[in-house]
Image (cartoon, rainbow, N blue to C red; front, side):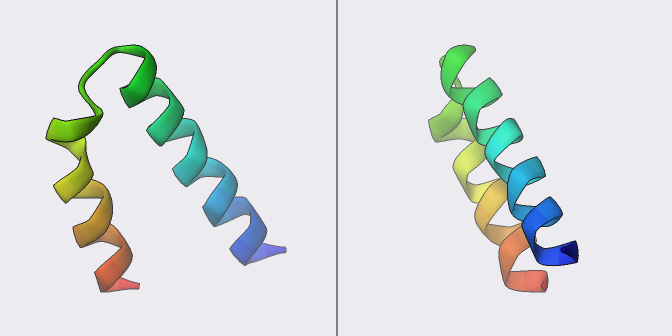
Length: 37
C-alpha cells in the first residue's frame, strides 16, 4: 500500500506540472527524487 500511495502522489505532481505547462522544468526534480528512493 505504501508504494501505491507513493506512485499516486508522484502522478498527481506530474499531472499538475503538465497542466501548468512546466513538466520539462520539473522532470529533473521528479527523477532525482526517484533516484533517492
